[in-house]
Amino acid sequence: MDKAYTPVGILAQATETLRGVRCIRLSVRTDETTSPERQRESDDQAAAALGIDFGEGDALREAVDLDVSASKVGPFERPQLGAWLKRPDDFDALVFWRFDRAIPVHGRHA
Image: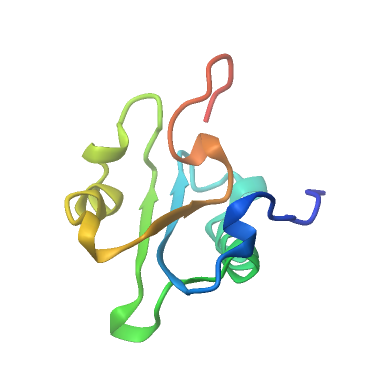
């Protein structure tokens, strides 16, 4: 089981709420260890600890790219994340469950 997220550094001391985008990516939908729900829960925990807000309802800032391989599709080419990356003034932070949800990590399959 993953350890609880503990923020470190200057971000943990932020006093204003940041507008975040919750980023969820899954190569294969049957991979239960990195399910969208698990990623969403972890992103929410990290965001709460760091003062990041994802919005809600029609104003929800979330990019969900399922059946998308990080090794084959770069962040700017992903359907939902790519759309957010084209509008950098609409958010302050991107939150991923793990770094390999953003880009492939050398020597690992994402």
